[in-house]
Length: 409
Ligand code: F0G
Image (cartoon, rainbow, N blue to C red; front, top):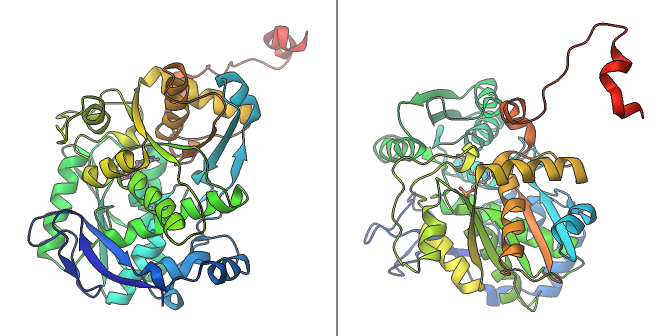
């Protein structure tokens, strides 16, 4: 077993035993966080243990709040940290790495959370899991539930999720319902359902799921040779991942493995930027966006439920946020695919577009070490490429040279 002690409300500090099936504080409605006793951690021993295990989420089992002997795993984590010199040169930054989460089993970072969250479901002995999703959460939960032999219920905003993701949820046998409404409507509905029925909720409001996602920080630290980067740039949707990754870096510092921690830089899409707008405008309350719209369907979210945790991540780390247009997102997706061989979905490309903007705005210095997190695989959303990229030319045999023209020059 790991070193987890309890659940704690981030607003009123009320604590709950880990055995409680609970998603938010029953006193004040605040978000919950898993608390560890870090004084029990022997950093050198931990380092030794990690080094003997393969690089995946369970390498870090002492800092996960579930029994690793029960792990429901598909081999998640251990994704590449790719040094991107050609893109770095184009953007004008010294050292750029891409942590490519599309390399996870179902093609997104959600697998880090689901391996822990579904293991928790097994520990609890529940029969069914549920989530609302813009696509990736449902693909991942469906796969891990299948592996664990659990029923999975998925609510998605009707007509608003990328085809590849919908196909995954169906293939893995989830009961998929398309809700007439937005992701935010679907999330409200599934939260109600899970409170009233015996379904285990695995959206990022579930603190156990976020524990799995924090392992990205440990991996980046190890992959950089036991160093933290100056900045971590990532897309923000429901705002769980930025909170989770920040927790991972804070823990490394707390247990004495790292000296510092990176600044967390969140990126949102124009048309779905309630979190970034709140930070930029200096407000301490989030104003929901009623009809969120962006080409990056994964982060088409008007009311990010984890905003209080994400706000703490940005403030505590000394980070910031930026807002990018759909055009900038598609351009970044193309650049990453064509300069570095990494094909990521639009929401993921928002991290690259965001870095470009932050460099332009002078928010990021040219000689910093930056890690951009690309959260999901490009194949998730083939329609975006077919819509925004070059058309494929149809020719008859014998017309090939003519059609290739200057390519052959
Ligand atoms: N990138 C991708 C590819 C995502 O699928 C998501 C979230 C995010 C970024 C944002 O992460 O919500 O932790 O801030 N997708 C969720 C889903 C909402 O249902 O798949 P976040």
